[in-house]
Length: 121
Image (cartoon, rainbow, N blue to C red; front, side):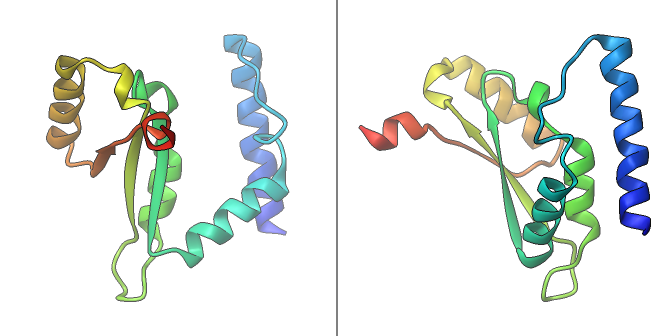
């Protein structure tokens, strides 16, 4: 089964990163069924929102996930879209928000600032 072998190859690479860099992956990241569910959601969606912590979005950004989303077609046979939802934006200064906005505009990445905490108030 190609999917299983690809996943095992990926896991071996991640295990090597864990060992070399001293990082720890969560059990969710190691679970093939979790990844299958994510892949199904992406395949059935026209637009995918990726929620990132706006205080350091690049630390949490997953380029391979974005590439996976883009390689799939939507109902109009065009690449699927993703939007970065930069959460906890209320914890950023205006200057920090402006800097991130400039960065994402320069990289032609669709994004929105958001604060779940402010919505609940």
